[in-house]
Length: 406
Image (tube, rainbow, N blue to C red; front, top):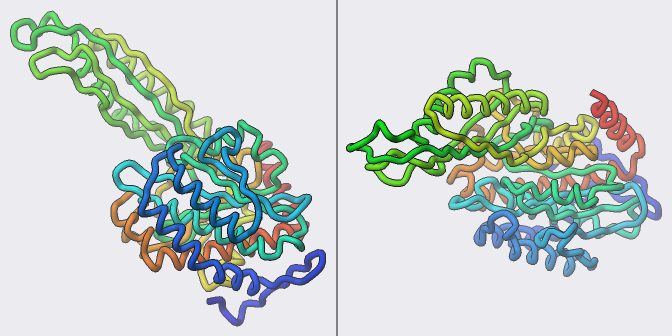
């Protein structure tokens, strides 16, 4: 429900006038379909690059209700897709995510992201013949560590796109909350085995070096800038209790607010592993897995989305320093096109957080579905505003270009 006191703008289109309320009504007309879609995705969680069923379900709903074809295996990625309505430029992309987490399923609420994106696209498709530009629904798999959007960027999917947007479930409404740049480091230690009781002096423990790496990393946290997150786990802790471990391994995730700080902290973590190996007289091999870039939240676009949310009865904050930040491959998208990644509450503040069992429950709750519908309306309203008012898109583009100079 929107506040009656908030004036409702009208966006002049090529052949007709569409009001925000009419977009809302279009979203509501598809509510049962998108709730069913989000529910099915939640009940059948699929891991990164395995989202064949979710991809098919979303595509089928779009083809049946929007009456447009869906391009499957987009960019050579089997579980990516794209659908388009409208013609010409500008081009606005609404992004859907739908991969799940191991063991705890949709504890990040990606089923709701998919439903919200689909609902917004279907509403805009209702007025496709009059859109002063093109709207794209892009299905982006493998956000949970698989860098699906990065693969699509590399395949040229975002070339010519003027702006991109999505939303993410959370425990509060935030418009421009940061997302951290990230990478993963794997350390494999190679020592010398021996009998742990009869001849421990003949061995060199790979496990000791592995554990010392964690202690050295902890000793360096005082030198990290605000926002840095370094956490890891042991992936190989030895072969048997009576053998000095010949092999051990661990993996660390490194995150920071900028690529520059990320690279600096990466160097610290690698030195810790090398120092531990030297002290324990073992060898270490370090391998890098590239993660995600930091999020460049476009304030001009976020203001448009915030106006839409307020008209729908929500009161979003810009950000909230009381809560931490994660990482997302939407950050990579924001490096190549003006983008937003706002958060919308599906539970009370501090009730639960992403990647927790309770959050997975909220992602299939009535409140979660209600928020999903609000998100669909806000995405649709924002997209139409960006297409219909050239000054909004110009402001977003100018901000993006200025930010890329820094």
